[in-house]
Amino acid sequence: MLEIFGPSAEKIVNEHIFKRPSIFSGPCDIYEQVRPTADQIHDKKTTCYGGKHTFAAALNGKASLLRAGLILKTCKALLANDKTYDYLRSRVKSDSDDDSVKRAFHLFNPLEKIDDKLVAKFRSLQKHFWSSSKKWKAVFLTLCIDPGWQIL
Image (cartoon, rainbow, N blue to C red; front, side, top):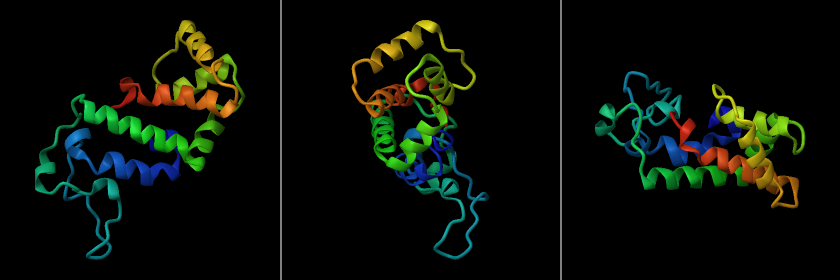
């Protein structure tokens, strides 16, 4: 998510994703933690937020309603934030055309090829909205909540 939404996404992603290792998994490693001072951690993503029980968290989390809800909440927060939305929108570049839909898809699914039928579905979705911003937010939200890319 940080690569997709840019550096301004860090606070939102830390709050909703990284602080919940029991839901999203990813074991923490106390030896990766660098503490410049007693109450400061250099990289928040290496923090063992949940205490000792997170040392052995699974590498990939299981699908659950709570996980899906937190992903939806995170995606909506990222799209509502002007800086993260503008960063993502700038990476798609052009307005609403097939190539821009393909670029948006590849941001979330860099190793997959998008089918022309799916491009047409996204373009059809965009037709339901008047403003360019709402068109793109609908596409980005759909791509963001798709569990297919969510191996963190």
